[in-house]
Amino acid sequence: VQLQASGGGLVQAGGSLRLSCTAPARTFSNNGVGWFRQAPGGEREFVAAISWNGQNTLYTDSVKGRFTISRDIATVYLQMSSLKPEDTAVYYCASARGSLASRQKGNYNYWGRGTQVTVSS
Image 1 (cartoon, one colour):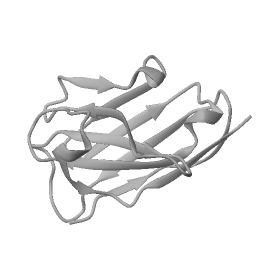
Image 2 (cartoon, rainbow, N blue to C red; image 1 turned 30 degrees about the vertical axis):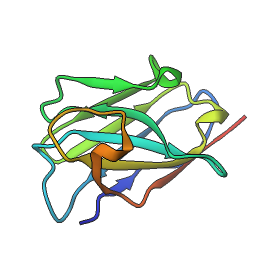
Image 3 (cartoon, rainbow, N blue to C red; image 1 turned 60 degrees about the horizontal axis):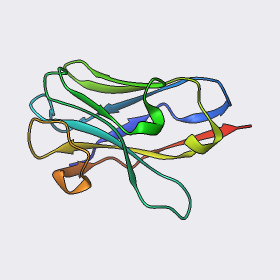
């Protein structure tokens, strides 16, 4: 099962991008979904997550107030604003084993291939 992340690109610092995550072969309407990112040479780290019904969201501290995660029946979005060079990474979406939002990679069992986000200074 493959998730598809899209919407990455090259943007100047202070700019915005919106990432999308879909699951063409299945639905994740009953699952929590998370966004993670991995910079070159770094670990894959948690960015944001949303519960199955969209009522609960989690963010890592460095993106609070700048990124917003949301979802509709078929897509999970990550709206990124006021982007900084340190946001540069490959961004991955993942579907959780359960319905809750989670910060832990181990709670996610389906992952997308990732989309590159590059923020220039």
